[in-house]
Image 1 (cartoon, helix red, strand yellow):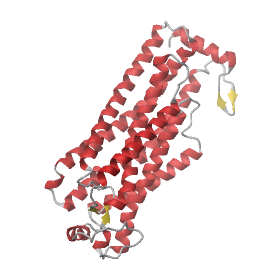
Image 2 (cartoon, rainbow, N blue to C red):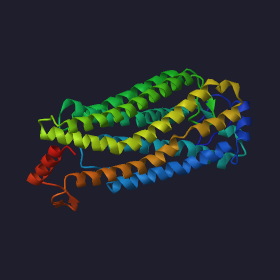
Image 3 (cartoon, helix red, strand yellow):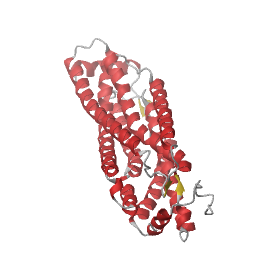
Image 4 (cartoon, rainbow, N blue to C red):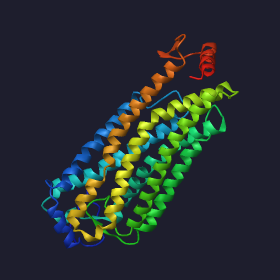
Length: 346
């Protein structure tokens, strides 16, 4: 048996000699370790940005859907933290035990918590965006001025994560594989990852198409001017504004998920036909989601900033009363502006 440090997850079995050889070949100056180290920095910067933006209130909007947006940002933070720990552990082990390749061999069993968190939050990146769209659809189609059941949507997503965790445990505990990276696909988990990849592609495609259709539906309903409720007219106008603002995020997210999951399915289809060192390099290159976790908070701040400005401008064209430094059309001014906009059908 090999001596293990506290940084490594101990193996239940002696290290596989072939993995020791592969670990020796994958040194600090190979493509595999270079991209891993870049992701350590990216994940750290992503966490700092999310904390800073949250403290400055950049993710809040005076809107009913802020809980789902906050939940999405929380998932992004957990994802960045998990990536920082996972990729950072590999960097530390390499720096401290680079001359002992067998000390770099990890147990998939003890890596399982990090792997499960990664699967849950990477799935949550797609499902939470779908929930934001679903919340707007409830408002539009139910003709209610305010959404209902936001907490239920969050609870449903948490239940889905628990289900995914149980599925992963029942799949991965079949055999204790040895790996060089905690996010590495093992033979027992490959079928599960293929199912998840296909599911996320379907969810994101549905989200993108539905968002575009809802924008056109809101525009058509407002222009038709057959709505008898002033508040529902406002909900339609505001929902159209929100969906238009979120389209860049939805498009960016869908493209990233397509690239990540399609490449993952292709890679896993011929994973047994290539040597281990090449396989590890490909797995590292195909994992583009850490870059997503860096860009997405910045994109959210930009989108929500534009949304706040558009909302303030939309209903403050006649007078501009201020509340705590923000333009807020109050009382009769608010309803008069609504009535003017609704009558014109602009």
